[in-house]
Image (cartoon, rainbow, N blue to C red):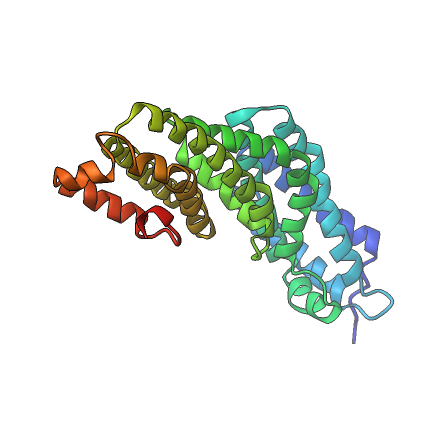
Length: 304
């Protein structure tokens, strides 16, 4: 009975690179659909090579070596192409490029999962390694995201600030970038919380602290309440449009604290338009708004 000759590590890896990774990289760089790049014979050839290299008897079973080299191949492409492309841009353009490069990386990870399916289903479990999907995410986190996260955060917060000031911003882009933060967290939301949510809440507090102080000087109590309600509704819509659900409660509490709680007594006692004036003039709409806004706040000393 004849046996297939063993595939040597360098020989097999060279085929995988030449027939697989290089054409895929060229496809991604050219913006082409990767499925049309590979012929059926190429798929079969690469897949069977990987399978053979993983199932050969020790010491010629190269599952661990392949796993290591796959990670290096993904990281190498990110360092050579994705990172420079993102670092060369700023603001919204940088965010657009970041998302484009994340999409390209996602395509590569899907290809890797298909080609190295045997590796993912058997070696990863036996050796207690990261699944290839998670390995791909960790590569992007290390090689790209960690290198540009400060600039990304600044660009995201600047866009949100502009929207709060009444300018149009690309909400779809913001949603896509927030998705990257969530993906980088690996299901725990730690990266999203530390790198975006906390700075966002700080920026929110600063913005509404300044705005609310201006409103107390220029607005009557009913006008102040109307602005407060509109701001809170806008923040809820903002959360729904592009932020993670985890942020909603904290965002609302931040707005309520900076707008309603911080200026509670000043506005309640405002001459000619405060609470007493609303009651005396039977301003039912304003009183209803007052109740709606303050009823959800845990401690409101002035209304107890």
